[in-house]
Image (tube, rainbow, N blue to C red; front, side):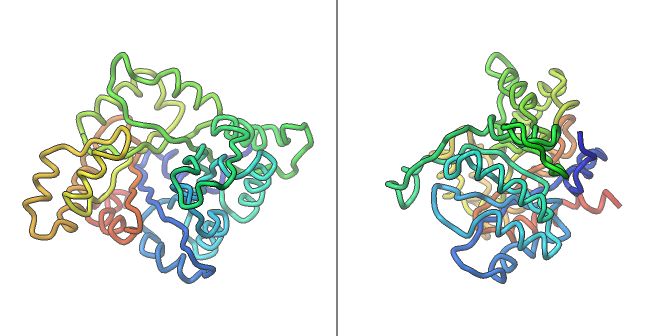
Length: 306
């Protein structure tokens, strides 16, 4: 296998520090300045920033171009790659090009159906799924060759991630699915939102007991809630997400719901940092990069590294 990639995220996780990642969406603009307007607030705070790839099946600036702009400005990206829009040749070429541009963190996803977007008649590719993509990238990195057998020299330095959902410890715990994703090459996981500390504790205990935390790093999804109304929307529309009634009541009673949402998020981040098996958090809030930056600052966790 190659040496570890020149990735701050990989270094933070390998050192056992609590990782802090966030997320940005590429703009509807042909402008690097607009990319940086959105994401510079996270510079020096987030260990890496995910760049979404056609989220909700809508066109934006390409994720690869957005990530390259970020790298040029000293902001480490996690490049999300979906298999909806490109076949294996295009995906392999993008991964190789990304590594050459200094992009080394990848989150492999299948992607939303076209019916979710604003051009539902566009063709879907889905030639391979996220697991197949990850296996192909793993072999390009570890074996230095394409699936066809042709050699790659130098081979790309890649740090590979997968998505997951926080599940209760018990009969429904997805041990087989996690095992398959790690076998495919997953080195880190970023989960869907989870606002329930007890559920995170149960999940992480199962990860520890199953030996998964010795083979991959698990970052729990969280985010600043903008309002009680948005929390209720998440409960009604996001699979596997439950914002507890107590959190919604706290938002309802706040004079400034956005500020209260940030406080709640920062408190949860602090709690998750104390849970064995939780390697970090992944902060998500569409078009709220500044709010995520404030959460990282308010959590005080970066100061503990010094």
